[in-house]
Length: 268
Image 1 (cartoon, rainbow, N blue to C red):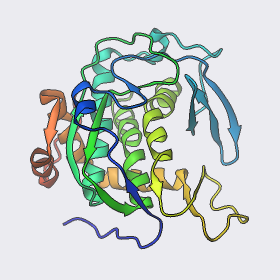
Image 2: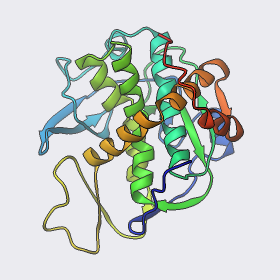
Image 3: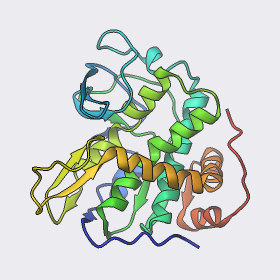
Image 4: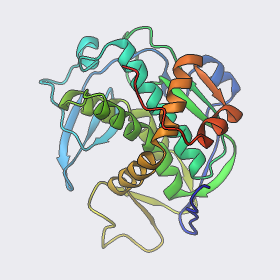
């Protein structure tokens, strides 16, 4: 029985950006598969104990400070000390978080895909890593649901890191700022009925006109965390399926979501 999370305001429509040709190549307009260049990492603190800045020329917000000196992160540093196998497992939980939370919220999830990590080779500026994706069919949904869907990936990966005793200042920052870079970019491109103001831990600004919608990303993180906790057995089940099969269809995901057995997250 899925919870009723219906909403009447702030409805947002997502145009499918990853068409079949893009799904086949693993690329989206901003994404480059299996390539990563972490350069020009610039962060400055904003209100609400969050940080704003850019990674590889793309806007980013994170609640974790940059633990690395300087502005250039080489590929070895960019792993946060994790092996490629562990990074792959973290990525599987990221995509599983999107898939399960999306289905719980009633979004038309049609497929989840996990790409195989081969290396951390440099990528052109203005791009980000796409280590997998969750495909959605056409829909109109509350902005609250869509923002929660987008942020559920990094929050599921964060929980997995914590459970595996792998959560450090480095892995927390890299997961949030780097792992969530594409999700943040996609959220900013969502077409909405009304203008949207994003904040990070400060709530709705008093000066924001009533004609604007508002999303506080800190509140979105909290909503995502709640759903992830509730559906963690299903998320780990989907993650393990993706590790074994690289892709899960809608039918696969529904079967995994409906299971009530806590399979646990045992892979490292």
